[in-house]
Image (cartoon, rainbow, N blue to C red; front, side, top):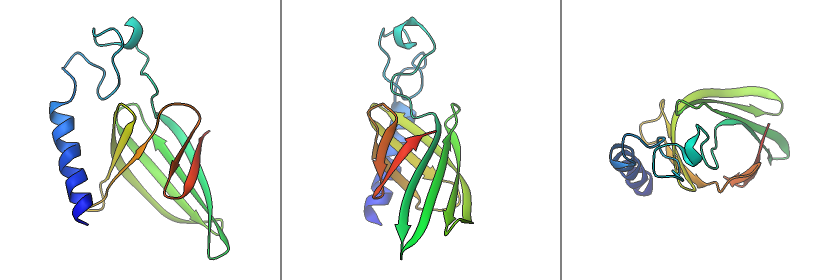
Length: 130
């Protein structure tokens, strides 16, 4: 619980201090001029739709996360193929660390590492970009 509060505070500080105004909001700016490589591409962006599969008590679980380019997102959780939860979140990517703040939970900050590519591991599951 204490670690979540620390992560939430760290996230808030990094969001407000972060890159300069001309940088692309939490990404790695390659040319120092605000846009990676002079274009609009974000290096190793998590933006997109991701799905993680797992098991719980022998029953299938599936998580779907949509990371929108405006640093907002939605998720759906399926347990035994039935929709069991949905929600919205805010996210920020700083280098290889992605921070998620769930809007419906006061202490719902989470983070994980993402270094690019089509998969990342989080919560014991491998998420794949759809």
